[in-house]
Length: 99
Image 1 (cartoon, rainbow, N blue to C red):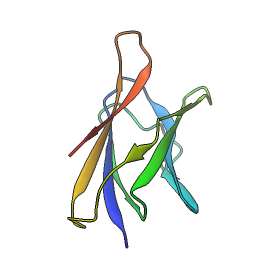
Image 2 (cartoon, rainbow, N blue to C red; image 1 turned 120 degrees about the vertical axis):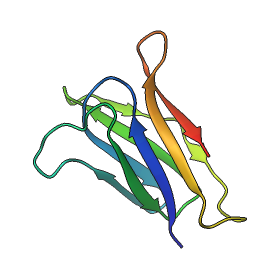
Image 3 (cartoon, rainbow, N blue to C red; image 1 turned 60 degrees about the vertical axis):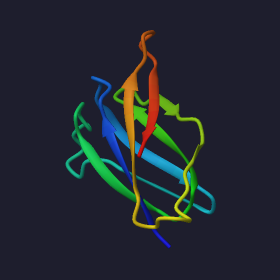
Image 4 (tube, helix red, strand yellow; image 1 turned 90 degrees about the vertical axis):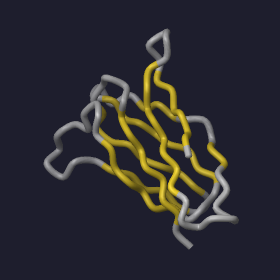
């Protein structure tokens, strides 16, 4: 059972990597040439769980962890969820789930 979640960096910042954690496994993405994930970049991750969280590593090595997300694939296994990484008014990263 694999489900797709698409992540899009709209923060205006660059990141070293973006990862995910779910029950019994984790994974993530970074650029093979060690360049940063730039603002506007998007990518897909396939996960096996309806519950997960994300971790962003910024260009200074700081780790920012999202709240846990709960999505529902029970009724539609082909559904694609998008997660936008943006900045709020205070300049903090926020993670926005969209269908």
